Amino acid sequence: MVVDANAKIVRELKIKTGIVKRLIKEAAYYEKESVQQAEKADKMEQEAVTEDEKYNAKKMAEVAQESKQMIGDSKHRMEKAAQELVKLLADNAAELESAAELVEEARQQVQAAGL
Image 1 (tube, helix red, strand yellow):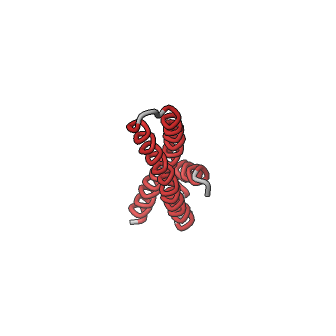
Image 2: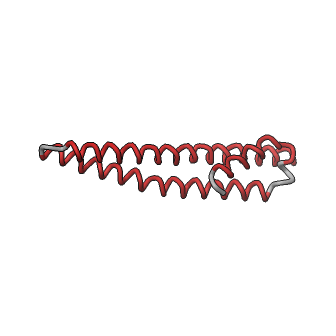
């Protein structure tokens, strides 16, 4: 019974660590995309001559703004997942002693998430 409980905790640790890792990548992607979209919108705006080009430049600026908004949402989800991982580590420290490598990876992901 104790082995089953430890196995469930280790499994949950792996899952939550993976979630934090994925959300870190997602936040970085949105930041990169936001910069690219803003640069593209600026370039389109400078080169716009016709009404269609001006309209397309305006729409690209809106896309860039949406990308910026996704950064905040993504970071919020990342922080929440990292906090849940920290809580899991704290609440189950004794049970996780046998999974030192997983605990270390989880701590690294929490640190990478900025907590």
